[in-house]
Each structure stands twice: as C-alpha cells, then as structure tokens.
Amino acid sequence: MADAPETPELTVLARARGGLGHLTLNRPRAINALDLDMVAQLSAALDAWQDDPDVGIVLLDGAGDRGLCAGGDVRSLYDQIVGGTPEQPSVFFRAEYTLNARIAEYPHPIVVIADGITMGGGIGLAGHAAVRVVTERSKLAMPETRIGFTPDVGGTWLLAHAPGRIGEYLGVTGATMDAADALYAGFADHLVPAAHLEALRDALETRADPSTPTELVLLFDETAGPPRLAAARPWIDDAFSADTVPEIVARLRARPEAEASATADTLAELSPTGMAVTLEAVRRARELPDLRAALAQEYRLVMWFAQTQPDLVEGIRAQLVDKDRTPSWRPATSAEVDAETVAAAFAWAPETPLWD
Image 1 (tube, rainbow, N blue to C red):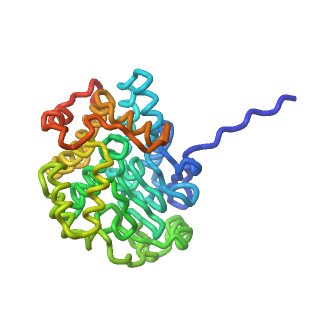
Image 2 (image 1 turned 90 degrees about the vertical axis):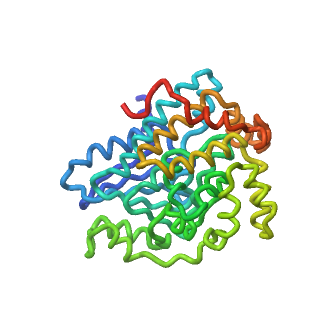
Image 3 (image 1 turned 120 degrees about the vertical axis):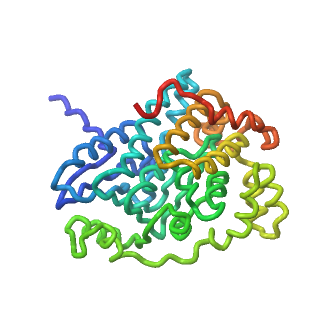
C-alpha cells in the first residue's frame, strides 16, 4: 500500500471555544510571516464568526516564542517584480489592507498578543485591534525604509497619531520599539508579562469575572518602565519637525546628544526615496479622516514603489536575497530626491483600486 500523502501544516489555526474565537499564525520558523493564503484564512475565520452568537471575543496570537509576525511576504513581492509582473502585488495588498480595516471595524472585540517580533505586516494585524497586548519580549517596528519601501498596513495612521514627531522618527528611521515605547507611541494598550500569557488566554476563554476583554487583560497588566522615546523627545521633536530629510540630518548633526548623531548615521544607510515619501506620508496621514483613507493613500504609494522604483527590488535583494546588506540606492542621497518625485508618488493611480 502506498504511503498516504502528508497533510500540509496549517499556517493559521482557527478554533472557537467558550465564546472565544482563537486565531494563531502558525509559521514559527518564519516568525509567522504573512502570505496571501494566511490573509485569506484569517479573513474567512472572521467572516464565519462575525454573526456567530457563540463568539464574543476574538484572540489573535502567533505560534512559537520568536514573535507574532515578522511582516509580509516581501520575498514574493521581489519575485513578482523581477519576474515582470509588478502589477501582481496589488492582489496581496488589497487583501491585506481589507483585513487591516476589518480588524479595526470588527463587531466583536479583537485582542492581539504582540509578543516578540511584530513588524511591518504584523503591525497591520496588531495595531488596529481593540485590545493590543505587548510583553517584555516585544519588538515593534515599521522598518520599510530599510528595503527601499514605505510603511503601509495602516502604519502611517498609527505613526501620524504618535506624540510630537515620534511618528516621523519611527517611520523614517524604522527604529524598533520595546513594550514601553509601543505603549507611549500608541501602538499598544497593555503590558502583560510573557509568563502570564497562558493565564490570559485561559481567562479570555473561560470568561472569569470581570468579563470585558479590557478588564480581563487588566488582571494581568503590569506598569512598563519609562519609555526611551519620551526621554528622546527634545531632540526627536526638534530634528524631525524639519521640512525635508536633508534638513532633519542637519539638525541631528547639530544636536549634542549621541543618539541624535547615531540617528543621522542611520539615515545615511536608508533609501533616500523611501525616507522622503515616508516623511510626507506620515504628515499627510495626520490630515486624513480615518484608517481607510490612510490605507488608500498607502496603497497608491506601495504600487508606485512596486511599479516604478528600483530601490524596492534593490532593498529586498540586499536584505533578504543576497543578504550582503549593501544596497545601491537610486538616487544615492537624500539631496537628490526632488519634490516632484515625492509628488508623483502621491499622485499615482493604480490600475486596480483598493476598495471596490
């Protein structure tokens, strides 16, 4: 008798018990990186539970102890562009952004545990939930400028509403937040020690009194230490209020803080086009009415990058394909990125609209 074919491992685990709909991203070896099939599975589960009277709370977490989600499948994006189908990424982005908006608008409260690495596409899952939990192991970031790209998945909406100029700083530099920083910047609501996560999951399922998700999380909540970002506000607000990236760098170089100088060094390594567009995107997002409008703006930008900009392919190549960490940006410096280029990014009209 021939051996039975192996059953492929489910990349999203969906189960409902005790009034709790529980979703787990299940690609731990890839830090639960998000692909189109996973987006479809998550969306299908939310469809099934939306009108289910037996589901009152949805919990989203990640398998393994490395992180909730390292981001979207940018390697697939690279393959599509290099393979001559730069329009194909629109399929993934439309599905992903629809899911991001769905999480924000879902009729049942969604609790997300952003334990460990939560970056890029992971922020799109965690950042818009009703109750956002981080742990002492959490590392949150929107690091897209490192690959010649710009923050998306509603990231500019979150960045735009961070205190002072923290949003510009986090978006342009791709800096990583710990739990205290994430709480301060508005990317999270509660700190729960990793040792208490199983007890939190159990409480959400068994509905220990008190019964609302926020009240349940507060049973395990601990006070975070002082956020690094709050202490850095003087030099961040001063430098990142400048009009352009070159002016930001000049202000950073003029500051006495060692962190400011180190940040200027970091900016010299990142995509000049990505930084210029990101700076403008965060500022424009402050004037937008809601998350959906921010997602629509981001969709135009990411398709502009995918269809016109060499930095995206080069950035992914350097970070994830050849892994030489030495991208050759075009243009090579921020001084060479003109206002017309940035304006073209925001005027881009994708062939396929985001919202039907």
